[in-house]
Amino acid sequence: MRALWTRQAALDATHGKAQGPDWVAAGVSIDTRTLQPGDLFIALKDVRDGHDFVADALAKGAAAALVARVPTGVAADAPLIIVNDVLEGLEALGIAARARTDARIIAVTGSAGKTSTKEMLRQVLLEQGRTHAAEASYNNHWGVPLTLARMPADTEFAIIEIGMNAPGEIAPLSKMTRPHVAMITTVAAAHLEAFENIQGIAHEKASIFEGLEPDGVALFNADIETAIILDDKAKAYASQRVGFGALPGAKLHADDIQLGEKTSVVRGQFRGQSFSFRVGAPGRHFAMNALAVYGAACLVGADAEVAACDIGTWSAPAGRGLRETVVLDAVEGWTFELFDDAFNANPASMGAALWVLTAVSPEDGKGRIRQGRRIAVLGDMLELGKTEEALHAGMAGHPAMELIDRVDCVGHRMRALYDALPDEKRGRCVATAEELAADAHHLVDAGDVVLVKGSKGSKVSLVVDALRKQGERRKSAADKGRA
Image 1 (cartoon, rainbow, N blue to C red):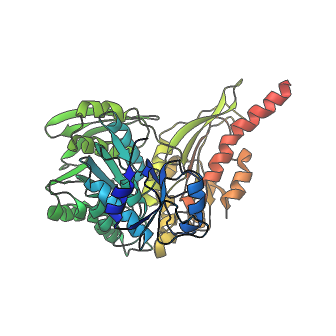
Image 2: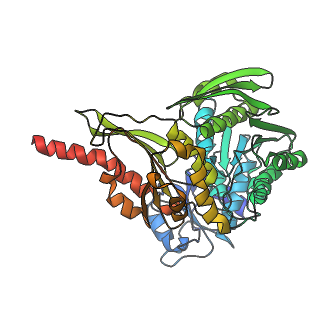
Image 3: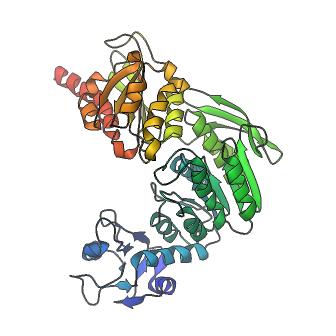
């Protein structure tokens, strides 16, 4: 078993009190459902108190548990490290793990594209060295220290995603991470419940630069209106400032971005060298994220040509723009195209997704209707504050809407968009995703191109699942007919 934490190393980091025999941990877990034998279990308190699951964790083979008290039902000689506060103990592990590695570290934040960019970076850097990155969207006050605590000492590259819901959250996490490159993908109207305006969001995002190492680089989107705020903040904390974008003045410059139905091609200049790469997903936002990935990889010492090649091997994951073909009738060749972008949404990412939808042409002459359509199934955008009604309604004026045939709306916030749409574009407007999912067989036909987009809380992923099952349902019916 490869040791990630020994008992002594964990004690040195947390200054806790040890109980029970010596141990070595191969991993760190906060959830008994995914815990692996040999993990150090962290008894965090959230919706449930992790202390209630320590006995279960040890029974499943946990090497030890980090706790603030000896839980009920746990043996007196159980392997425990007792600290005053479990979250502070986890933070101490993260800080110690960061201190013991020579890895080149990239921190990623932004109003959209954080997780996709992190995953693209992971794929690119994995080919060039031992790479560590956050799981899923572990980017908050416990996700960042957990990601750091899981980082092996011999890591060569690390990518840490940092998010926020309110002012003052990013800087402490960046200071814990101590990145060599701090990246801001974009700044957009998101989490407006906690900020007065987009300028406030920009200031908070820019605080990621406060944690930069002395030789650190600030890498930020130079094409957005708030770029000057990001650049001003970078002047105080970064040894280098690198703006990326397609507008004049960007140091990491995209001379040409060619958008296709399935891929995009980016050509540009960086540090006096030309580059060209293909992005394995459609959409300008993915092309811009890939531009930042290329720059970050170069800045941490990766081979530029290899990085450019490997960007093309990445594709959008489920819930974040994944494109798939759903087969309705294999004999007739009846299919429809589905874009699963149901994990997150704000006005900027919603607009980007609509452009992706319009880039794909429907197919006529198939199915019942015989005319392919572009269909958008849009769920509520959450955490937009007092301007949420106007921001939802404003999507009706997005230029991409002209090329979209029908819009189905989910949630009471999306009612504002539905009311603002012209009659010929209105599909259904329902209160819950369950209602639309139950009627999925009426939503699409062969030849259609369908986008499903919304904040995770809108649960439009249920509609995605129901649409996928249309292919399975029709296949099952056909198999029964042949029986």
